[in-house]
Length: 286
Image (cartoon, rainbow, N blue to C red):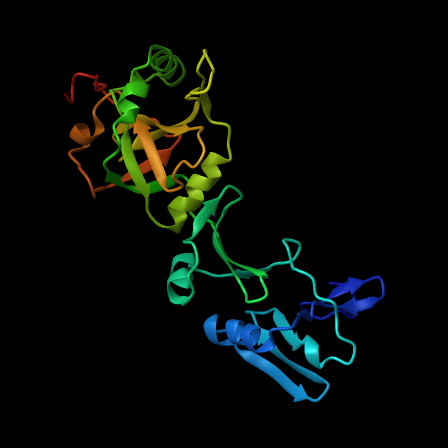
C-alpha cells in the first residue's frame, strides 16, 4: 500500500483518493428516488431539500449512488437518453432470491458465457440496472455438475444415429452411442459455475462434413455419470440453446443402467474415466 494511503484508497497522480459516489441527474426525481429507495430497497444515507438543490444518496452495498433533481439546479443540465453507455451493476449473493424479492416485472436470471448469472431492469429514466451473481464454484466443486433428469424432445435419437455423427463419437470419444441422450437440468450455483467454466473450453468437436444450413455441429466433454459409467456431454452449437440443459451420451441407455428416471439427481464428474472390469455394452441396458 502506498505511503499515506488508507485501506480502500489508491495512490493517484494527484494524491491519495478513492471512489466516492456516482451522481445521476434526473428530471423525474420523485419516480427515480422511489425506484431506488422503495422498489429496490437501497437505504438512504443522506438527503437534502433546498430551494436550489434536492437529492438523496443511496448505499448500494459499498458504493453510493446520488440522485439529484435537475430542475432544482441553478444551471440545469441538458439530459439526453442514457442509451447503453452507462448502467448500474449490483452484485448479489443469490440471483434467484434477488429476482424473486424485487417487486418489478423483469425477465428472469440468465447465465452468460463470462461466468455470471444476471437479470436487468430499467429505472424510470431508462438507466439499465443489472443485478449480477458471479459464478465461482466453491472449493472441490469445480469438477462436478449436479443435475436432475428430465424428458427430452426425442430429436437427439435421430442425431446420435447419423452415420457421420456416430462415427465421430466412436472415433473421438470411444463411445458408440445408444440412441438418444439423457437430459439434465443443472442444479445449484456451483454446478452452474462449473458448467460455464467447462463451456469456455474448446472440448472435442463433432462436425458435420456436409455443413449446410442444418450443420448439427457440437462440442463434447468427457464425464463419468454417478462414478459408474463413462459418458460425454454433447453441447449443440445452435442459437438459443437452453442455458441450464445438459445432454449426455453413453454406450448404454443411461436411465436403465442407473435405475433412475425423471426428477432423480445424477452427478457428472468432469474428465473422469471409470475403470470397469466388464465394460457395459450397448445391449446390456436394452
